[in-house]
Length: 544
Image (cartoon, rainbow, N blue to C red; front, top):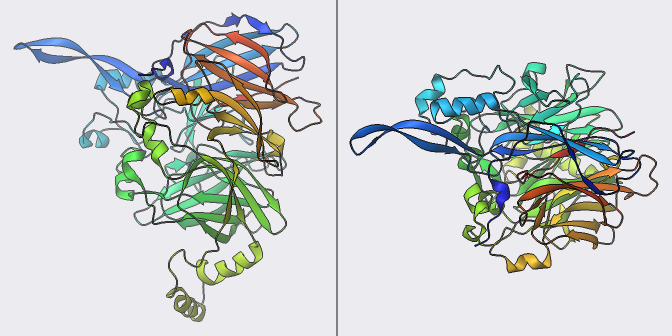
């Protein structure tokens, strides 16, 4: 039975350590690089129990049971090309929460989306005895996404979770210094949940995200923008739609596209702070919906439907004439969500189904926006006047809630199963050629179950694999593309990935040439950094 060590507690060193670099860093790669992921996944505590008729102190564990649940670990890597050095420091960023778990033998969620699939080990009564919000910077587990800046806010390093939280860290020593919600920044950004993957428009300088105000019948999705011009933010648009699990959205120069996959929530369970998986179910009878929001008109202008499917991550979105292309990593259903529990990942032979669910890189084309907009005006948009409302109701009575929506054209773009996509950051929102991600090697078929063990480069125009990196027994994190400052070609740059070497029980920093996927430099950490999952888990702060 295959065992991978990257799903246990991190080995944490509190010192700044200079790593030995093998190879040569590119002469332009100088700056700071951050990663975020699982840190503490098993919290040990002592409790009193009766043993042989006597009250004794025994040891027990509170366990975070899903890959997306943990007390986070943040790593900082300083690259210096001139000296050809890499230094490393790290910090666990939720000490206060860990103390509470030890004291109470569990943790009471204050809001929905605290846990993905973890038993709190607390009674319902404890919910009413818990403050409604955390006031301490290290009181929330913000370990899903990390960004080095948010326009309009003064901080230089922020972490996010599935709830509506921004945790600011000191970029030097990684200490949590502030915790706030989007709703505290602007009361119009309503809801206890937000998409963990906000996006920065490099052209307008806006940070865009969506918050979710969960009701019992539907959810209000509020798309908001923060910028230097509007530091308190502004609302772009709101829409009401089914309450679904949202991990991503798409952005182009003129549009925001919200894909809602039919992983639908039981709102009453979610509002009572059940874990995300316990309150959501995949409904194969429902379609995937795409809501198209005009950034200029600040409203929904069209909706489309596609087959029932699921995706964590979008690769890119761009406009072509009167259409929008959306490239996404697509699964048949939500099986992947339920496979990524920590017990199954620790002993891969126990995974069910026995192989990790496969994905496809698919392109959805939202064609003929003008015609789709006309259909939305008739069937989808609320109408004001009584006569218009009556005529609209007569038309709608012959259509189901989605039957009238135009169908998005779908085509498989790249055949192998890939995840954790990365592209040139300045190509986001425009046409592009190259995508990088993690995938499976030919040797993975020999294992009892598997996790991604290769870095793969694809050409989205030719629909082909054009490069791979693989080393036996090694498991890479998301490869982050860092462009050369004076680059001419789209793939002129490097990929940075933190790789777990299971044979040596240690992790290393890997720098690959993004054109050839040949190694340029690596540095052993001498300790294990647990494997992380999620778009944008690593970011380069700056290069000179």
